[in-house]
Image 1 (cartoon, rainbow, N blue to C red):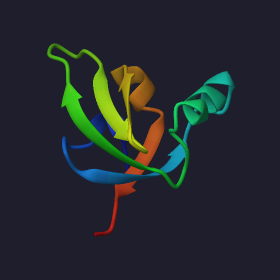
Image 2 (image 1 turned 45 degrees about the horizontal axis):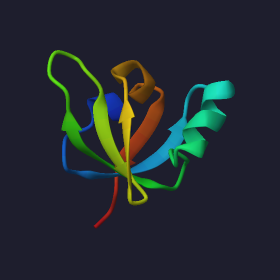
Image 3 (image 1 turned 180 degrees about the vertical axis):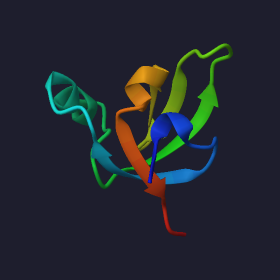
Image 4 (image 1 turned 45 degrees about the vertical axis):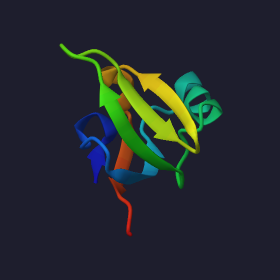
Length: 77
């Protein structure tokens, strides 16, 4: 398993866990970033900027520091 900030662009990943157990874990779930959902990185801003992640038909921008709390594994085809 890897964290979302280390995931490759345009691959489908299965979200396994959110490592930060606090206010942010609920906030992530409100954005659709919950265990069991599929996520795809569709773009990255240059120079360490935010990631654009597609989750359940929505696009969400995440900082690299925020993406580092999301544990994923490559989704089976």
